[in-house]
Image (cartoon, rainbow, N blue to C red):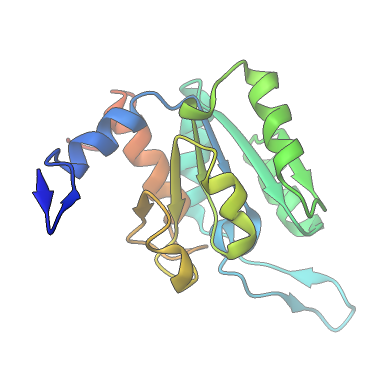
Length: 183
């Protein structure tokens, strides 16, 4: 179909998203602004203080139990985030990397997957290189405005407030592995 001389797809974008999510084998996300709300606080003793949503943690545990691979790639080191991720069973954690592409390529090799089998959740412009590679790119509701027209899906949830859960639910539900959701 053409509109104003531009060829556009008449395919339902929701059905295309379902098709793409049905192929996902690895869910990758960053910490600041996705697994947390992006705020960084310090205690009086100088320790980093972070909050994590229990719903995101539950969904990650469910995904791991169902055989989904979970990987985390972050620009910053965070003892608090590492502790929480390890507590819920995530073992593929890379922190302190400015260029995420080599880590992404290593994740694909480790799990033997293609770009199309990876979803990436990011919230800021430094995530653009991965958004351009993965099968499905996602940003939280409060991801930077610049990303909204450059990702495949904008979650209805903010980072640190259920965004990771939203994505995991969609992927597992479409794959018939999420028993708490009706499609």
